[in-house]
Amino acid sequence: MPTSSVPTTLPARYYTDPDYFREELERFYCQTWICAGRTEQVQQPGEYFLREIAGESVIVTRDRENKLQAFFNVCRHRGTRLCATSQGKFDGRIQCPYHGWTYGLDGSLIGAPHMHDGFCREEYPLNRVALDVWDGNIFINLNPQPDSLASQLEDLPQKFANWGMADLRMHRRIEYQVKANWKLMVVNYNECLHCPILHPSLSAISDYLSGENDEPHRGYIGGTMDFQGGAQTMSKDGSLRRDYLPGLTAEERSKVYYYAVFPNLFISLHPDYVMTHTLWPRAVDRTDVICEWHFHPAEMAKPNFEADDAIEFWDTTNREDWAISELSHAGIKSRAYKPGPYSRCESLPHAFDRMVLEREAEGIGKKT
Ligand code: FES
Ligand SMILES: [Fe+2]
Image (cartoon, rainbow, N blue to C red; front, top):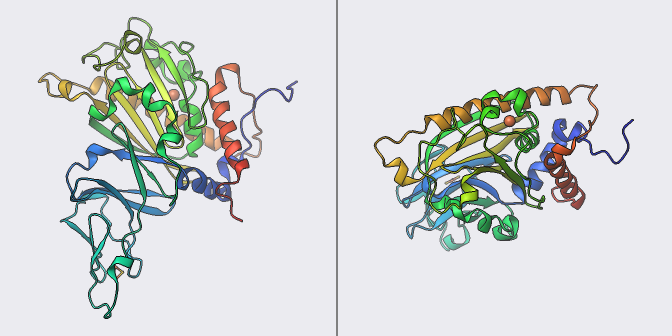
């Protein structure tokens, strides 16, 4: 008979209630830093991409000084969405398609046709979104007065400095639409008990009971896994087709580090590449995922560079994870579902659930 000390999964409403989902979007995706993309996506002044979250659209671009900027995609005249194409390059300015109000790449209003005498353009810049960068990863925060990104990341920048993420370049991006609550994908990412059943190829090269978990932190959870069967990286046959990333210690070359940085970034640090997932919740039961593979430019420049071994391996694994997350969501919706017991090997999912409950108790994002 279960005792109250046995940790259990969360009640169904955390995964199925649209009202709770709206609160949670506010709490995790509007009041904290979320990973929006990579600095290399916007290299020149005027290059931009959009990110949509919680019904908001955010423009991430570079101004004339090459400084990264983020703005709400909302005109200050009559509120129109300024830009409808998900990525591209502004021609030195951002012009509203409705009545032609025009903004500089720094967000200042530089043209407002037909406004009355005495109209003060300085009073109508674009609404700024906080932006900061960690090692090539762009973070945005919709809270107008956010805590620092550094305080949210805690010791991660030092911990992962050796992978040199800012130096890496994206080789491939695959986007997925998953019919599951975003938190089910976080808990799935943070345990490998399911690996022998769900991921036969992964289990051939990585021991599902190996590795060590880090002490859970307020802003992240994660741990390592070791290779097995002579594998040296996570790929179709486990063999290393690229040099180790420069800067890694012998220990760092010998395992994979899997970290979920709350709320929306998974970083999987391999000896020869880094894979990232960002989660974009669209509804209580729907999540878009962007998965990217980043390699060292010196390797990518080699004529015999290849990466399909890593991409196809993880694309298959991703699809297995999304399919089980969808089944998980479908089961949790049932009237028969009750919170079930976690084993000792599921300490990270339990730590994530605890964090979800703690943040709820703090009341952030609650409608008053
Ligand atoms: S709404 Fe943008 S110029 Fe009128
Ligand atoms: Fe998995």
